[in-house]
Image (cartoon, chains in turn green, orange):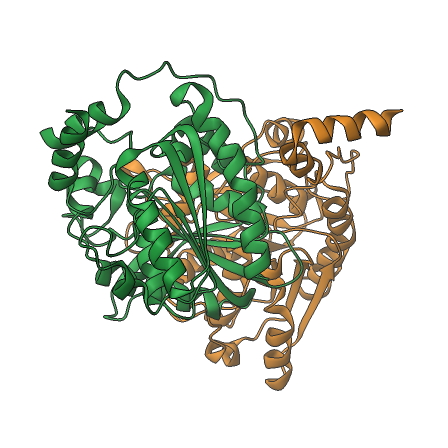
Length: 306
Length: 295
């Protein structure tokens, strides 16, 4: 029964994942969440820890307010000439740095996504956090102006849309005087899947990190075709208690192996989908997953973006 | 023994502790009346507020009216005495007109200049308010709306206001930090009547939506430009030598200094030894520069 509900939920969701924090706008999604997670364990108190990305909304806001680094909003020019408002934050270092494109989750641009960018900058990278929804709000703005419409609006973005926006962000990053010319990507939930899809699309990408997102072609058994051109090594971070995404991992591993691609999988037992931005959840397992996954991300980028 | 304990702790707690130890240790700068005050946050105290209260100089808010009806809320500080003085426009960081910026204005007045610190975000906050109501994070968002043209028009209003002050000697300089550093250089491009421009960790203009420097405006610069960078701020420091080369090609006076170990925003963030040292070394150069060009 649980399984059936999950499948039903997944069908309604089509190919995009859903963060645990999103209020369910449709019935199927709610069913999927309840079916997957059962009774929610009580939230834990997350200690302040500036060695990993903030994992609660309050910590994210505080981190941004206390950051000593230079962060700024820029309008990155897209291929069609339209602007894409993006948060860009810089490391404190004397030499040039690799650039990491941060793809937010189904909740769009918020302090948690920006603070993750700030963390990457603290760890030595230039972070670009694009608002993929820029220009899609009725007033011409993006995520913040869309408010509760973020979830439904984000569904209208195709992989091609997102890839084109990431191409523009990557080009912007490469041209920065402080950039060393290397580009990585990291995405979460909806953005995790987009991160994988971008690695499949952009052959000049140097490293891709996928947090709990499925590989392109997972839904229709076209993994091998979709991943054929992928060049960048991929690290996948998965939650043990996230059957919907977890179920796609073995086939992805098989396809990547068959194609001779580099794909490193880490699954964090007990953690739930969206653990990085929900560190108070899963009775400590989400926090543990965040603490364990982040050093792996840094090691990976330090190797491939140097 | 201590080392053993630290090692044991590090081994026990894994990478988290190691990563935290890699952070720069806390440093409390000594009281130093020769340089501007610092802050422990993004500019709104509590340290600057205490310093502002303690200042012996005449200071207050003035409303600078623009022709289009916009009011630029400006913090003005007068030097002691009653003689004529040059006017220095203090251009705020990306965080807007904070208490720290007002503290810098106080120091500029202490150095003998009439300081004007305009809130360039005036009217851009909720309900026609400005920096204070936006907060430092809101300011970073709103500041995008200040195009080079709007910025120059607002700085022109401040410059006109300064020139008309009874104590003004008719000379005007700018000193800007971070976003304001870039704005200081940008204003030297926009305003040929400017007499001196100081840029702290700013960068040259770029074309809209692109990070590539656009040097085309440099030809119109008349004011000498003095720039300061922290070596750990590669975002701006990487632009220093190329900018110097362009200025040299055009025969424009441009001098710059890079401070080892110092980060972006070092004058505000004197809470590392390198940042404090960079402030101590750079500020006398600012004083001398203004003395040379605004007397």
